[in-house]
Picture 1: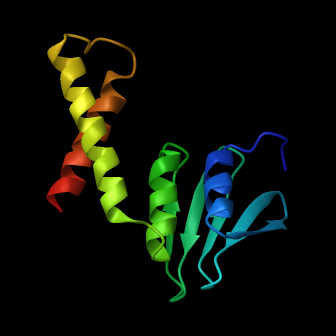
Picture 2: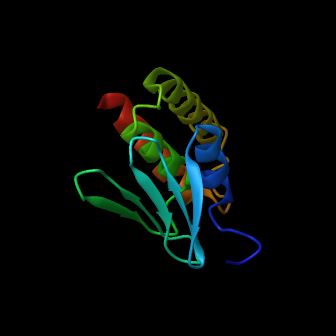
Picture 3: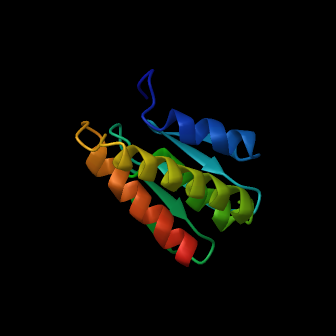
Length: 125
């Protein structure tokens, strides 16, 4: 395993939520007491969430840590949707103000717009 893990934020957040770490080969595995597992798959940050029914959701390295963390916590009932929704609403509000101020030509604008669309989709779900 490399000394710098690409999903260190995911690992820290899940460990704080009570998930236990098991080192497996070169990549970490975190297991919730329910049996649901998060598995670091690649050194580049690809990972998967393995459910009790044998299904698995794979996240590419481009998937933001926050999305992976939310998926893991939601799978075990540990995610408080009211807190997450408030965070997403605040983010969407700030992005709207940035766009209205004309700050839509900075390097991260495409990612910011995608995140805003995701937040709006979650709010409407």
